[in-house]
Length: 204
Ligand SMILES: Cc1cc2nc3c(=O)[nH]c(=O)nc-3n(C[C@H](O)[C@H](O)[C@H](O)COP(=O)(O)O)c2cc1C
Image 1 (cartoon, helix red, strand yellow):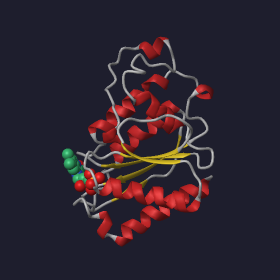
Image 2 (cartoon, rainbow, N blue to C red):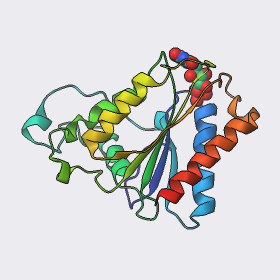
Image 3 (cartoon, rainbow, N blue to C red):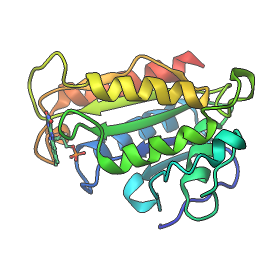
C-alpha cells in the first residue's frame, strides 16, 4: 500500500532501507511479529519508509515563528508520519526505527524524515508531541567491527528524540550483516532482534 494513514493510534515499526526485502525489512518483521505475539489485538503497523512520501526540510524557519507547526504539512506525508511516531498505541507506547548504516550514518531518506522533526524543536518540553512515548532503534551494518560504526546515527537519533520529546531507549546494533538475506540466515542475530522486541514490550 502506498501512502500513509494517520487514522487511529498504532504502534509503528518503520523499516528505513531503500533495499526491499533486505535485512531491515526482515528485522522489522521480526519486531512486529514479536509485538503481535506478546500483545494480541495490538493496533500495529509495520511500514517501509520508501513507500511514504517524504520531502526534505527547506529551513524556511516557519516553525521558529510558529512552534509545533510546519509550512510543509499537507504537502507530503512527513508530518503525519512524525505524528504517528510520536503517538503510538497506549497498549505499547514505543515506536521502532529499523535502519541500515550507509557510510557511517543513516540513509538519506531517513535523515530527510528526521530533519523534519525541526518543526517541534522550538516547543517547550511539556508541549512536545512525543512526551508520552518511547523511541527504540535497531541499526544494522555490514562491517564486523568498528567501535564508531553507529556513533553518528545514534547522536542524530538522540537529538531528534529530544526535539520530538520522545524517550530514546537503549538501541540494538548489529554488525556483520551485508547480503540482503544475511539476517534471515543468521539465527543468532534473529534471536537478538526478537529478544530486543520482547524487552520493549516489557518496558510498558
Ligand atoms: C550506500 C551504502 C552505504 C553503506 N555503508 C556502509 C557502512 O558505512 N558501513 C557498513 O558496515 N555497511 C555499509 N553498508 C552496508 C549495509 O549497511 C548493509 O548491507 C545492511 O545489511 C543493509 O541493510 P538492508 O538490507 O536493510 O538494506 C552500506 C550499504 C549501502 C547501500
